[in-house]
Length: 249
Image (cartoon, rainbow, N blue to C red; front, side, top):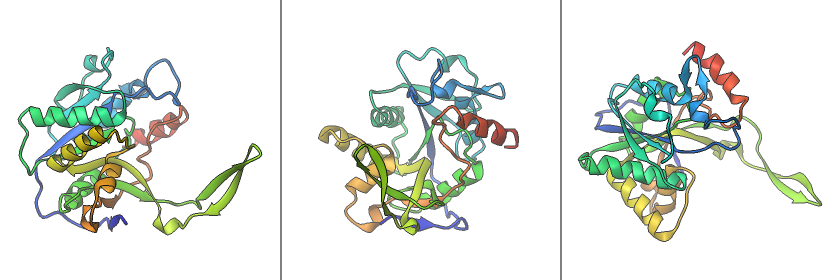
């Protein structure tokens, strides 16, 4: 069972944090001629907005960005942080592994270092939430992630005779929506990523990786309450929200 953290908890110390943004995806559901991370909002791409948000967090002074091999856009852009480029893999987990390996191989090999992984398509993340994530998650063995409690009643669907039916109602009090950034100790993160590769396992986020390999409650990542505005741009209409939100950010 995941642990929960309130918005009031404070950190005792802040270790070295390495930001890693995953921007190698295509985003087929989003549509358009370009990957969604290169959609422009107020004269900046979604990717630039995401980097700018992390640049407002004091411990973050550099960013590794994972991009597709044939990406000819990212390196032409200006960013709010110094950037190291990393070639992505076939799946998201492969891209994350490449990014973490690049951080490790660059010489950032302290056992006290942490990796903060963020989706390029979440430009509306708030610096205050990221700061709180760092403060709380670095006090845990297994790190943590931004997440928000489910607001709506959630149904389990069943398909019968071509119709989608509401078959059950899930307990809302136990459900949270995972977001990014997600923050983990580099040594344990790299170990789990390599184990998953060896075993042929795939996960949709890094918290799932830690959940899978957990052997006791302290191995579960901490859920740190974030903001519902930190949406992942998935469909074209999501841009309308991001445009309105970023005007006042």
